[in-house]
Length: 223
Image (cartoon, rainbow, N blue to C red; front, side):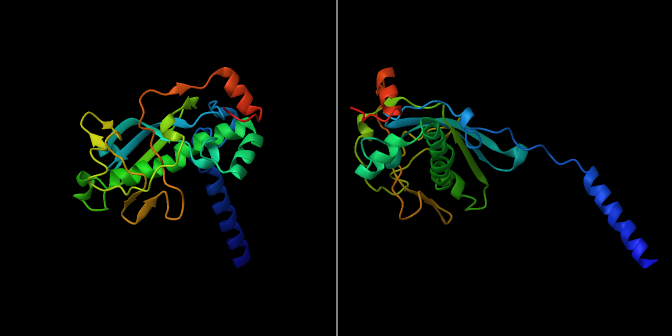
């Protein structure tokens, strides 16, 4: 009799669980699906990341939007890559390259921007208790910037090197933030031991021509 009761209970539990409707998963993006990645050129050295940071909790949170121009990391940058990295870049599938450029914005740059925001005096008022989340994406890149043709120095994000990241009017502005490694509340971005995140300071850059894009994506060495 006890076995029958236990079996009935198990059936009821399974039925209840099966009847529960869980929230649908978020819409996939380039991080999940190569076919959704915006096109980028292997001859590019710089990319613009579109970022949004949310400070606070749920409906009371404040949103800040801005664009952050950064140099592509060495493994994706034909001018700063090592010989070994350059060979790997030339043989990398073009669509996989597109995804890695997107992932650089959505992961590495987003972490850097979040740490820079957390380090701001406005957020420090509530110490590290203020929730801050940042998301970044990109429309792809064909930008070649002279500022991104050489490695940048290690510069810690401090008040004198990184000012006014969040501003009135829901604006995220990294133009006065000259650092290449951010640290706040125990988080370091990029992590210690990894290359720093280099910024593209030039407003005027060269757009890679179609023939350069085609040659680079086919594996030819960029000019």
